[in-house]
Amino acid sequence: MDVEEKEKLWKKVDDLEKQTYDKTQDILNEILPEAFSVIKETARRFKENEIVEVTANDFDRELAATREHVNISGSKAHFKNQWMAGGNLITWDMVHYDVQLVGGVVLHEGKIAEMSTGEGKTLVATLPVYLNALPGKGVHIVTVNDYLAKRDSEWMGVLFEFHGLKVDCIDKHQPNSRQRREAYLADVTYGTNNEFGFDYLRDNMTAFPDELVQRPHNYTIVDEVDSVLIDDARTPLIISGPTPKGEHHEFDEFKPSVQKLYSAQKNFVTKILAESKKLLADKSNSENEKKGGSIAKILRSSILKPS
Picture (spheres, rainbow, N blue to C red):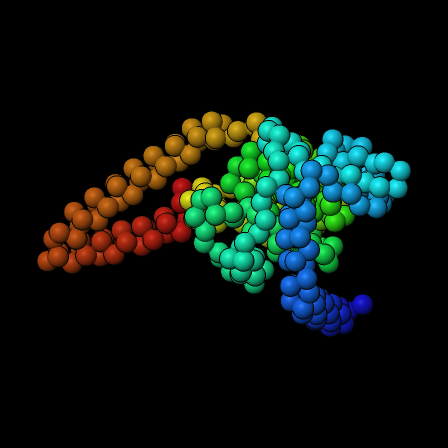
């Protein structure tokens, strides 16, 4: 296949991807009120009931094997409103306010929502996260430190897991591990800005597709956006790979020869310059002028053919 035909195919792929994205956004905007209502109602039921009972599915059974707050009884799954988050046992007691619903719309549109500490930024994020996780392309939530990443994934993750979405945190797993790759395949992935950034750099350094950990980026919410994109951005993320024979240094081997050459060139140029100035000082002597011309020729030839 020639280059022009390949370019046409890639252009067609790009156009199809753009059409897919636009169509997905249209559908998400259409179902936004219902999706937000689902999350708000889920939060209300967890607040008003110590146990929320639903018909168990395969995902609920998987959760029951690793989550203490999920129990299976026959065909029913029981979700307790108490679970561990950040090393503490929390009791769910929050329901979204109307102003938080507006904040969720702002985040879904890709804008910045400014809220003071204690106004519920973490709870607001659950609305657009659930909505944008529905297409199955993954949602990233970026935090400023690993404690918040782990805590929020355990604290807010129950709302998503209740509706069959897989939640994980990359800071819980080692870089380039199978567990971290699976964390990126989750519907909702929490992590710190540094870990997301270094994983991106490592993916761009690898030569084998099966070593990639991240999948194509879809939708991201940045918590404490001023800290992540302004304060922390002042410190660049730098990563490097191993250099062949990196321990072998040739500087000490060639330094004496270079110094000798540099000294010889410096002495030669200094000598020629002094002689030229001496000969050119007496302009009335035509013989000196001729000699000065010959010196200039010598100087030019010396530059072209250094000794």
